Length: 368
Image 1 (tube, rainbow, N blue to C red):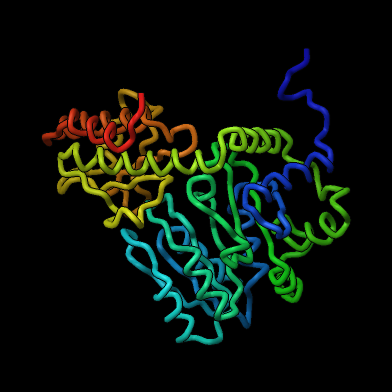
Image 2: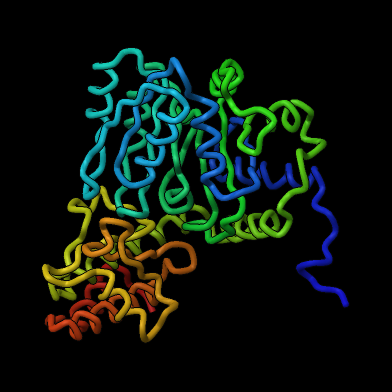
């Protein structure tokens, strides 16, 4: 008995390379693009272990938990790490980055998360890229949450290593990811004796065995279903139009923020300045005396499919996250999420105004 998801012809090298070209088009990049066969933490760790090491001084910008993870990896591979940490309710500024670089001229590697879905902030990469380029450091960007939700131009912004995943705004699979690599990044990685080689973490293996070989022979059997799902999500983005996709995410974020403020009950935006709020997810601060994780549990009781989650780790008692990305970047999803939060707040003894929330959403994001 045949099965459409199991009895598939092998994914050819030419097909794999064609999907890579579509990713490059999405990023408007002329750099090499490598699709790696794993979740985005795979190329992120590979970039850090390839681009930094003993003798490196790294500026690690921390605006959320992923920035903290990068610092741990950088230290583990022997780099001297300078952490530039800002409160999670805000974004880092290009001025802060420039000052940190000026204070440590030896910095040769900079790591940054574009949008932190976990904390709901987004950082001004174009301006930061100018500062990093003027300094001469290698620039690594985690754009997993931002790709498809807001502008992302690695070439124009001077990003040497730009990592993306498809599972958020792109609305695709989590099992594969991609990285664009500049020429000077390849040079840095090749010159690093501790860069992973003959390893699943190795970018160099893809360079020497895949790219330099004309993309004719894959390193190993590809994750076929995930690659086909990635191709399908790229086709869907192309059909909708990238500008339209980004506009939909921006509208979802603006409507969620406006609706939450109108709902009342003590909810407040976690990211203070709307200009620093990521379009991929809106984070809210739970009212004083209300446990955010309990509130989310109550909100999900009626509809577990809603894109609501409590903050991670230490933020679990105070932060609520509305993940309006991908297929959930719709007015219906925003309205349903706010209605569920309103009902949960009412159950916790807080007074809310669901009609005001619906009106705010409709005024912010007109539609059916």
